[in-house]
Length: 348
Image 1 (cartoon, helix red, strand yellow):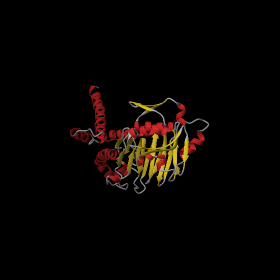
Image 2 (image 1 turned 180 degrees about the vertical axis):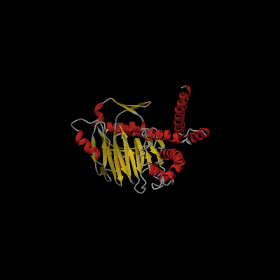
Image 3 (image 1 turned 60 degrees about the vertical axis):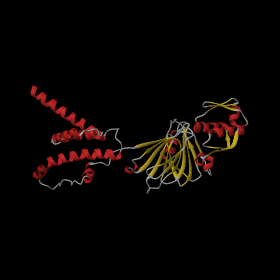
Image 4 (image 1 turned 120 degrees about the vertical axis):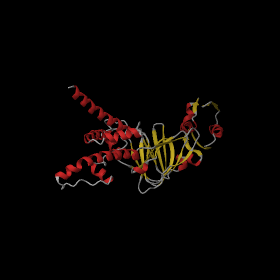
């Protein structure tokens, strides 16, 4: 009885050891000695079945990099140049080759799966700007991005192994996307996804809403669902399923929080994204909106003593790169005294 229990304990330990070593191999933390141990354990035919159960658990895991729906057994054999066993072979011949083929297939499956994970992993590069800073970026697909102040962009540099390129944006950026034989370029915000192939456009994601302006080419917008009410659920679901097409000059603003949609056409880059040209241009814009944009760009807070002033509309143009000049010109524009203490501007 004691001998039988020892055998059972050894089997369980072996299986756990295989799982442990296999996970280290997937995580690329396996030493040479551990790798040799793993391969030695897999030389036993019964251990192959234990490895297959581990692989099955990996396939069912929600933590995998991508879906493995295309990695079926026949596809794996084809990719590793193995021939499928001949169904017309005699039973004796099948039995003779079964063990070495199983061992080889098990080893190759582990190596193939590890390589697949490695090649298809996300490689995220983060670009970031401070207040008053603009950064010019060339992505490794030859697309160009001009990142506005107080912004952050996440770029998946390993796009070549998938059918699309993807960035996530917090703040504002102007994109000049390279056309790559239909390989789609996606710009994601919490509110929507911009789908393009090659074009120029501006995306701003600030204050719980996203604004997209199309300068040239064509883009499609896929809205992200927010909180649905029972009354609006049907119409909203129809809206979310549709891709909204934009043409040059279109400006589209959407918030998944408030579900508010605003659309304009025949707009220019100077009207909606003048920062790209090195200026801040405001035409018939309420001061509260001007203060919001200045706060986003320069990190300043505005304390306005006369609240009625916030609704006053102004026409003005300020140099983007010089905050001291901006505040001097603003005093002349609104004809009010403005005092700056640290990062707070008091408007009297």
